[in-house]
Length: 177
Image (cartoon, rainbow, N blue to C red; front, side, top):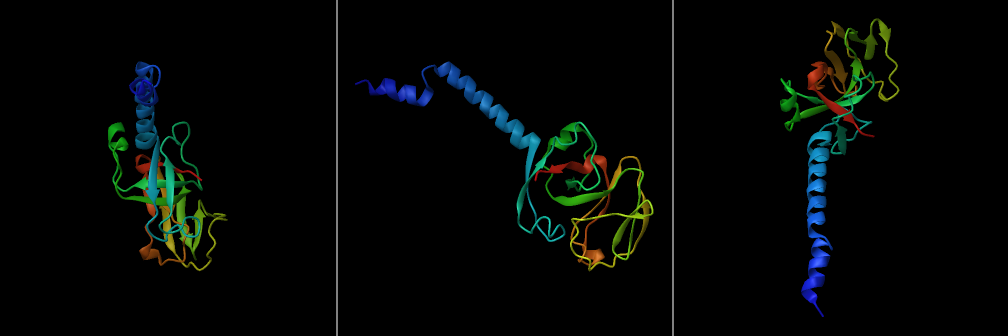
């Protein structure tokens, strides 16, 4: 029996050059997917409860907005520091926020007795389960590249909730459900 021949076939296949090409292709594909296209995030906090629980793990699709801009109601990852160019957007973001977009460029956003008011009309938010919210925030007019984001847990005191206006280049991508 030729054990050396079988060991080589099991390890490298019948054609080692082809196997090496496959390994390189798989390695490049994995780097593209897991370093550029998808980003693993862990929720740390209760600002998105009940939609996303504290300590839950999710994936962010960083390519979601290549063909269209973010929409009202999308849950997105927000980079706290603005990215200046394409390559800085590929860098690991460090600390991020997971928030829901309620205000789009050009909108006027306010809160009255805990209700989000967009352009003078109360926003229908079926994802917000808690009605124990009494936020009163004066109107903010969004510029052409700004979005207003907020968490789903509005029972938190307003001063403890990170929310507000963020630039388009701070939006990393959309959460995958």
